[in-house]
Length: 105
Image 1 (cartoon, helix red, strand yellow):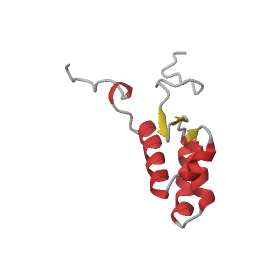
Image 2 (cartoon, helix red, strand yellow; image 1 turned 90 degrees about the vertical axis):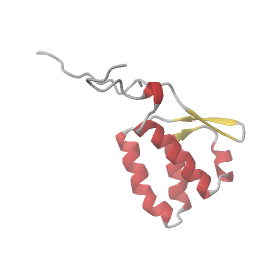
Image 3 (tube, helix red, strand yellow; image 1 turned 180 degrees about the horizontal axis):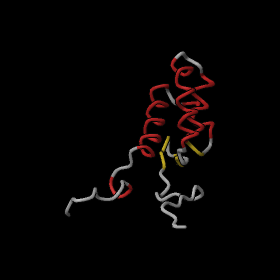
Image 4 (cartoon, helix red, strand yellow; image 1 turned 30 degrees about the vertical axis):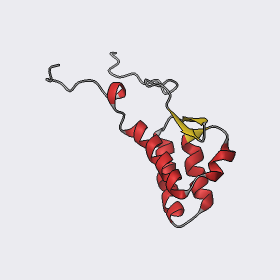
C-alpha cells in the first residue's frame, strides 16, 4: 500500500517562536487543534471577565515563569494570545507553505 501522507505530531516544521515580556522570554507552545478549541471555549468566559479563563488562555499558549503574567493588562493578554495563535494559524515568510502550483519565482 502507498502512503500518501505521513504526519508526525511529535515534531514541528517551524522554529519555536518567542514573546518577550519585561525582558523575560516566553516560548510559544505548539498550537494544536485541541489547544485552539480550548482557547475558543475559554473566550466567552474571558469576555465575561473571568480571570481564571484569561489565565488558562495565556498559560495554554506560553511557556515560562507565570508570575510575570500577572502584571499584564487584559489588552496585553489579548495581544499575546493573538500573536501566538496567529503565528500558528497563519505563519508568514519562510514558515508559510510553499509556492502555489503554477506560480513562477
